[in-house]
Length: 84
Image 1 (cartoon, helix red, strand yellow):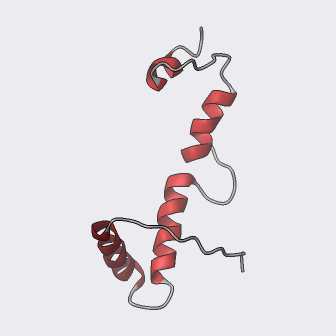
Image 2 (image 1 turned 45 degrees about the vertical axis):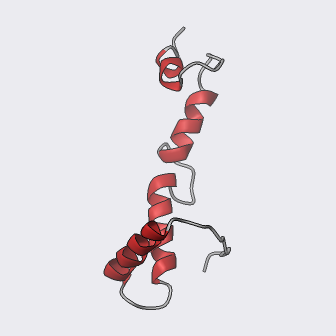
C-alpha cells in the first residue's frame, strides 16, 4: 500500500456537493469513496505518480527545453516564439 497524506482544503459548497455526488455514483456510498474520487480526478489532471509528458510535467517541460526567456509577455505568445 502506498503512503498517504491528509490534505485539508476549502472548496465552494456547490463544488463539494458535485464531488460527493460524483464519488457516490462512481464508487458507491462506502467508506473511502470521496478520497478515491479526488485521487482519480487529480491523477487525471496532474498525471500519475510517475513523471509523464502530460499535464503539469508537460507544461513545466516546455520552459525547460526552450532557449527563450519569458519576460512577462503573454504566455501563449512567448511559447509561439520558441524557435527565436
